Image (cartoon, rainbow, N blue to C red; front, side, top):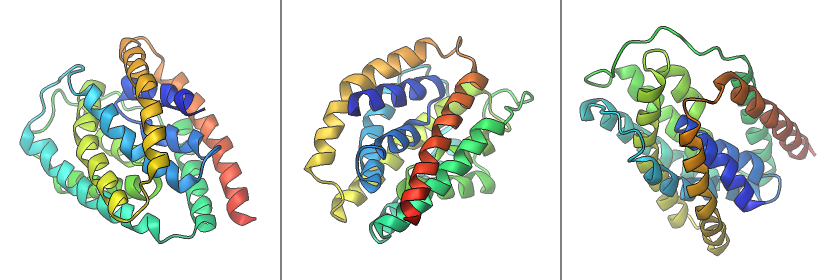
Length: 241
């Protein structure tokens, strides 16, 4: 199951620049401890992000993406610290609700068609706030894409958006993983699972990048939304048991 999860997750990464942790946590929680799926997703997302750095390197101003990245790192550390202190059963309920909301977002979101050309020269306060919120969500429940995509897709085209997500996810994933190591949540099982994911990570990113311009975004979004509905119901029932 773990290599298959990795293939699906990183195919999505190649297509959109994001979604890796969402898929890993969603599918992984069906077979392993949900908390450990968040730790695993953070660890493997480091390598997934690095594999995307040289893919379609759209230029973004450092004064734009770096401050967003810093706030996302700070949020990631806080979220990863909070994860350790939430009881497992309550966490499954929280994760289930989060997946349900994410699924609804995937199913009903209509991509905007009017965007500016190019990225801004510097980050705005709203950009920084969304970065911090997304970082916390990523460290706590492994889902950080919806706030970012909802906000930044309003004025970035899909190439600029994918590039931004690739750049800011790498330091956030590193910060989360380091925090998990220090709070004792990163163990030998996570390391083994991560190594199993690397071969399918490379294949998934390659396939996703080569279908980037051909895949129907609306079809893919609906398929992922339905998957998350199924996972969310299962987690909510387990959290309420």
